[in-house]
Image (cartoon, rainbow, N blue to C red; front, side, top):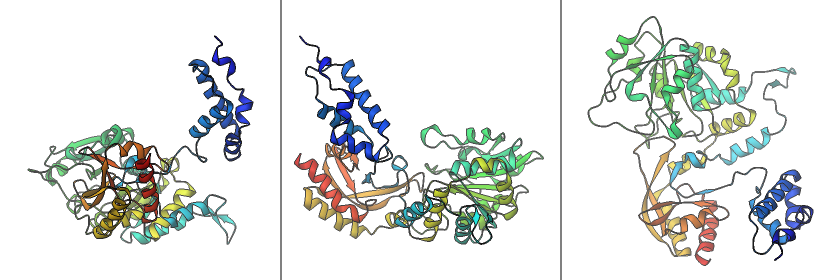
Length: 429
């Protein structure tokens, strides 16, 4: 019997197939060739009963290649989770996308066009952030929320003590632990209070000549209820040391929809030396770490050597400025009208044969734990979940009680027809 590996097509024959010639035109030809070589090697390692021809191998390779310059794929988020960390948190607005495209080439990120000299980096973005936070003496931007907290604690307390409540020594996703982060800066943690209760006297008793700052951290993704006690920022700022407040979720000002979510403006007005948060959560911008606070403190952070290692690129600056000056999808999704969601769900259900059911969305991304966002979803048989994820574009819903739920809260209305078509293809398969 002839070994089928003898009949495998040559690499150049596979590459000559039109589908791969087109792929090589939009991707690096070396990437396409490597994919062909690897696919043929896989056939040699586990030979099939019948050798595939060049067209078959080319089709298999083309299906596995990235559709553009990245392996990241656009996804329709039908989970009802607005800030879904695994799906990239905040989707950028159309204004932010245009700003990123504009910033992709040569731009005056650190250049003064008037006098032809070097200028302050990202000055337009920083000015937009100052306008959004008029209570801040100054502001700064780094590459994510954790970086903002690292910079603040390093500049204020490296080699010294950071006083923090035991109930705020949090762990968030992927095993990320706040104590580990703080200790990596060279600061020493001084824990006060108990897991569920802490008083101002606990903080005051811990302060000594080696205290760098007091740190207050919003628990973000969990709540402690019952016999509890915490100390608010306005009382902590009566202590004779700087107070660093991490509000985490990036809410710049109070929002009636999120009554229990701490915000940057309130912390600043309470006297915090510096407030840190993320840009890709409730603000609805790109991944970034925002710092706002007393002018002397922020300037001290900006001059710290670590600030250079944590700085953001021109694309982030552009997207952040646009997100600060125009409405964002996150705001629209959070404040979506329940009746409008119901109408859209009815249309989808009538088109594909699903059932409209009540569905509570959530903020996600560690924001507003326990808060639900009443809305609606379309219920389909459970097998739809995997099939929709495998489609193009992929649709990610959620599975509850043996059903696939498609919650339209985070689906742009302009994508409703895409969603109808995606569900229809699964139904008709």
